[in-house]
Image (cartoon, rainbow, N blue to C red; front, side, top):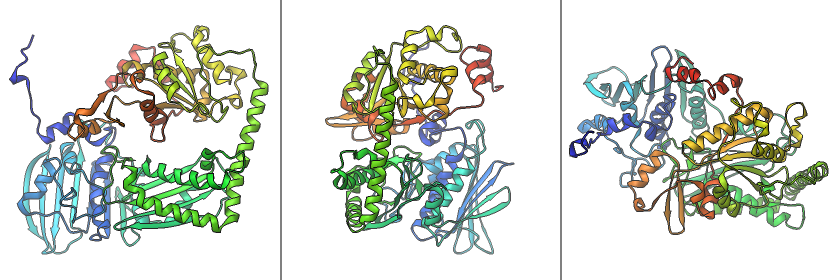
Length: 594
């Protein structure tokens, strides 16, 4: 056995640490899309600060060379700063104490360029200063191989970053062009004076759209008959909030809420909760006299676009998809917004009545369906495991691992909305035991709870819940159980997946637990930040859902910031199901022949 001594300890430098665990710094390594976004953030920050008005993203799919340039101030070249910010983590001009350079910015962590250099075969910075001198810094395999400067005749850009991602790191070198285009589209909306150019294999496209057209195309459906669009801007010193919202009177009841923060598309967070809470408060005050009005119905048909510009945004991870600032930080902006919305509805009674009637009509339909559903149920059926909710059809069914986890969730749930169904260990593998699967008592009861039947008797209209959510521990056993549950649904009741009714609820492995504060830690980057932060002594290792107190379980699994992953149906279902039973298929997958 090897000796464990001082010689066993290895200290990685910044570049080595990124290559050792790239997911901690850029999220996914499936494609290099996030690397492009990291450079793009820096160029957009020059635009936000008023120093640049042209940003170009160039993608060469043949050579896998990606270039991003802007005509801003140009990276400082003194003291070999370009080398420092490409090799030393947490180096930059966007931290507290040096934020006079960028009051509003997207990139903040001092990670981006180091990560790109560390994860690229080729990385180059070109900087053109006003005296028409171009400084070039070239790296190969994250090592500096050349540094020089030359005189030039014009200044087509100020800073240009080019790189070829390392094919050993990424599963595919093909970036998500749709996502990059959307980033540029969001930027064009809020910086109409700037020009955003996307060049793909020599084909140039100027990205430009007004905010009104964006709202119409991305927040509304073609068949939406809508109320008047409410459009409010509020400002608090250097920060501002813009909200556009309306209600669909005849379209999908599912709310459509899009947002951006400092030109970053953000898909969840505290700002969305603050807005929906404001809307609930306002309509509750107007609709409380009608006994059919339920506050949660105010989301029915809601169409919203939120744009925030913040000096100190806090994101849930390096990939910046969730805003996690404390609500107190945003209260100034949102309190001003609430006053504007209050005044609007007090002065526009016709619009108010249209929206309230939409809620009431929706509630009548739900009540009617509940009556029909109850009338067709067999009253003799008793569920031994199910802890049902009171809202039929609008509720959510949580399939959980074991009675211990179920106990925490039963205490934490909203009894009106959340139904809990505990599994006793692992259900049979539907692929290996097709004939026996329906003999399993837990599977029988789960199918009975769902209510749709199977095979030729299947009827999606008899589905008893709006969402079916699998919740398991964040370990290998939990992941296996989730896979078995998904396989069962895909094999026995695939239409439930096709109708987008099946979800996975992620659970964290760690959390900051300090007094009355409980903050789930979802990523390795968040974990590292927590270990290096002021709450490093308050990190809780979560071994299983059953160990959570009810209020902690509520934060992770029931609150608005829970992490729900919709399960998508695939045409390659048979091929995927083979992986559950055929070891040769698994070997092919691991070898890359799949």
